[in-house]
Length: 237
Image 1: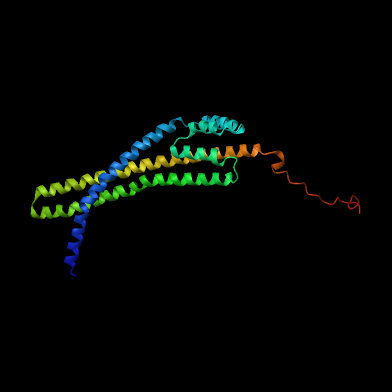
Image 2: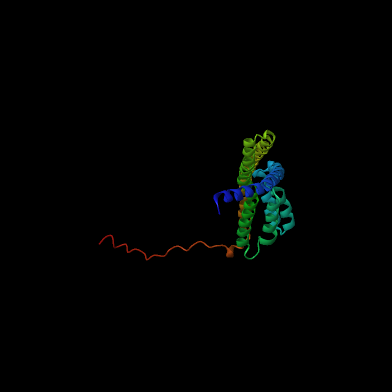
């Protein structure tokens, strides 16, 4: 196969990718707009985040759990759940894990699952951080080849049309990357704070469970080490 034939194949492949790249750039732009709307809702919900409010909710929840009123405890903690995933985790912690056999291990597992779910939500915008500029670059370079051919042929109208497409996709790609990066950066902090709040909830619940155990079931202090009494006459010998 001659070099010219290989070049023609590569040119055909690039031309075949032109429309899919443009469509993908538009879809990515729509996706980042959707993520931006969801991000605005998340910010609005977390404006009420306050540690003293979390403390009061946990105090009320512990009092409810002391009287075996789990639904009331869930209702109180629902007001400090800043997302649907956080609310689902809190409900499971209170109704399925607290005071149950193996509850400590299940609580740790639920925290890990919540962390993985947060990473999965972050992957969407993190992917756009990379994919946006890549689509912009591909959408820029693909029309340049026919634009240069039009320039050589003196076809100014075709040249200007291809350049318009190239530069427009460049702008869209840079915009995608910038928006996705900003959303990912702030979401990473928000989700980290959510996990920190859940870890504190678990610590308080486990502390309440430990305090509710009978005295005989709690860990007894280690017995003092018994040694042979020293012979008082040793020092006088």
